[in-house]
Image (tube, rainbow over all chains, first blue to last red):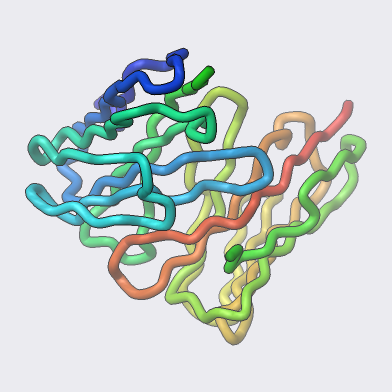
Length: 114
Length: 111
């Protein structure tokens, strides 16, 4: 099992460009999450999907959109990138049933917006 | 608004020393998790505590959940260079799956 995989690992964008971050999990988990990590701020939830076909906003959703393509895949899209979106992005999935809410994380995508 | 406050944010110690990291909140959580993250990787779950007053041990690491389920601590005995990394606490409210993370504690253990 690969667990949670993310592509790409690194990306540099210019302000105004768009891109999609891909995430897939092979653990048959229902719930999936997108976080951003910035120095001194821990991880902040952008969007999450409790099950296939549903998505909900997290703490910092502005400037992002998501798609739960199927049970395995959950993508994050930046329509018009801004320097404030320079960050490390993590995808996670949750083991079900979720007593304790354990989440499993991918290796991250390091995004720089110039 | 940071609902979970971690302290200290940075800690640099010598091999063999003991340390404690604190995670505090004014909110009650249904469970609390501790993750460890190494450079260039995603966080990895160390432990989940669910019951107020619960203590869990993982080799030299001891985790405690406060009686009121508002705070937690991580104690490392005889730290080793391999313990170096970012330690994150995360609280859950209900079974919805969303986690609230603390800012993290950057630990450096020097040989």
